[in-house]
Length: 399
Image (cartoon, rainbow, N blue to C red; front, side, top):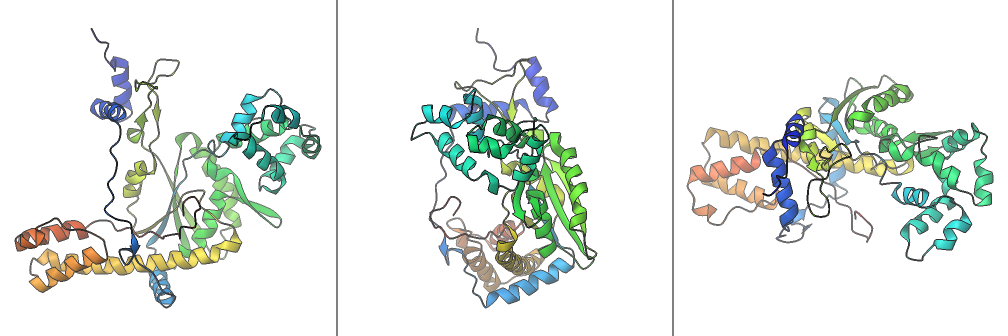
């Protein structure tokens, strides 16, 4: 008799997470069958999915946005639950592979196609330029270790120990947002701090309040809150006050882990292992926020001050463009809700969803009854609206 995939303990564990057995079995089935490919109709181009804003548009759009921001309609939503383990993957690999981590040891086994080795050498060469370098130097100095002497001798094991583990900064195991990202004269900032600085520029209302919501991991929530308690005073000046809120990713959105044969993976105690879902799993957090105009930006998608002004310019312009679309949608939905719209208005709305929202109506829609066309238009217009900024592709990741 074939052994069941899930036992009674598994079923209890699944229900405790707010999941259903059917959902977990569906995930396992998907792993076995594979994921279907998305069929793209065509690429987005300027005029077909991409709207090009001219320099003449920017002042008007910024004014529209600033008026809405002053009314308290803006919230920043920052997915920040990720740990920094992926950032330090190559360094962790080097640290774990070698009992001694020095120039001779690594060079003896280095291969030209070893990306970890290449990354490690590049990292060591630029170590003193990182925003966390002074903290690392101080942590090592407190234990009578001279980081500069170790670098000059080519002895790196202790440096990695104090950088990656709880012996020192523990950077490989703390939230990405707590790592110091940028250096400034006399100070440095974590990614969390950079989001505070951004919020001051475009998310402050007439009462001088800036609203930011962070998603964090449950195990690090208190650590993150302690960090904000420590640093917020540096930025709450000239009457500005931050209204910070936090949420965690729901366990019910996790995905079961499997082995190479797509069987449920278990820990040493025999319990199922689940992995957090991607950013799509945060849609529930976003919905619960009940925000009006929400700017979504990943925790590590921050730039130093010298590059901020251009990003602020286009954030405000995007916000103004979004508000213009929202006003149009509200106008159309109001007219549709009465049921008293003529054919010319219906044609106008279909033209709008096709040209501006890139919605392709089903074939034969023009032959449907007036009521059916109104229902279709309402279903496409009465929903959340998203506007994304496009970065020109210059052969860089994410371009």
